[in-house]
Image (cartoon, rainbow, N blue to C red; front, side, top):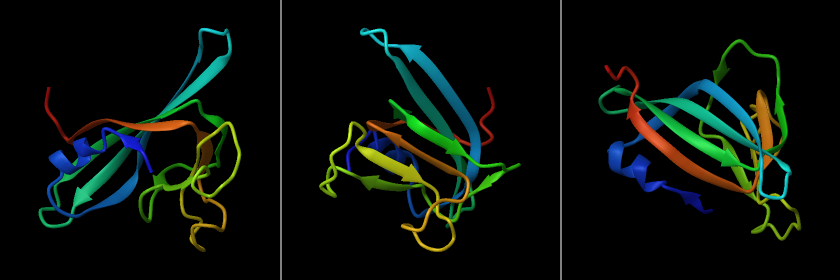
Length: 134
C-alpha cells in the first residue's frame, strides 16, 4: 500500500500508538483541469502513545473521493486505524485504487460502522501534539 508521507508518523510517534477517534472531517470539492469535480477528504485522528499516554493528531488527506458515506454519529470512535483495501492488489479493475472504511465490529470485510469511501491516493499531511499551543 502506497501512503505518501507515512514516514511523518514514524518520525514523530516513537513507539506504539492507538487510534482513539476521528476528531475532524473536512470535505472539499474543486474543479480539475478538465472541469470535472474532484473531492478531497481530510480526516484528523486522535491517537495516543501507549507508553507515555501522550495524545497526538494525525491529519490524512484522501484524493479523488467517491461514494463517501457517513452514518449518523455524534462522535467517531475507532477500534483501530481505518481499513484500506488496495483494489489493484486484489485484482479489481476500478477508477478508484482504495476502498476505505472503519471496522463494523464484526470483522474488516463485514461492512462499516460510521464512514466509508473510495479514493485514488492517500497522503499524511501532518502529525502534531494534540494540545499544541500556538
